[in-house]
Image (cartoon, rainbow, N blue to C red; front, side, top):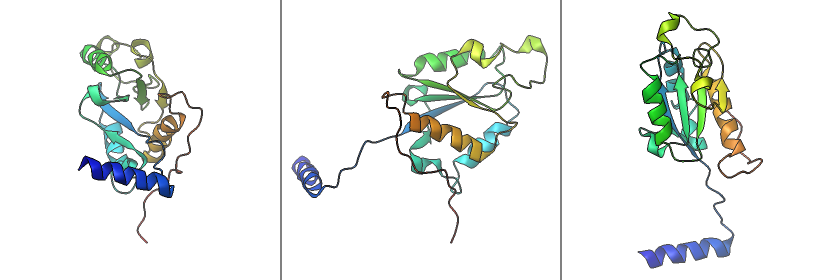
Length: 169
């Protein structure tokens, strides 16, 4: 089997059928105390209409496999520890994204004694996605911009397809 795969690789190289650089980001979502509005919109981003998987963005179950820690909701005192644990479990290099106004501390409802503070005070935030809740198109735009920056390899720009929704003919 290995010989066949090596031959296939040689044939592709000789024919000029290079695959290019694989580009993808794995996202670990953590709800730090939200109203579930952002989670609903995040689910809409991964449905067949928007289909972020075709761009190489996928939500994973473990922070050990994640490149981006996507945080929704205002960080409560009870979630500050688990959020830090998830961040520490991620391999370097890692990005943190704040999804929604509550995560970005723009408009938080509730008692101040129940909140651990702004997400930016707890973790270094690289991607800010404002909105209450942000639209699926805004979420896709910001996440694809992070993919285009490709901060993991230090490249300035990568060509990525434009954000378009799948629509039936």
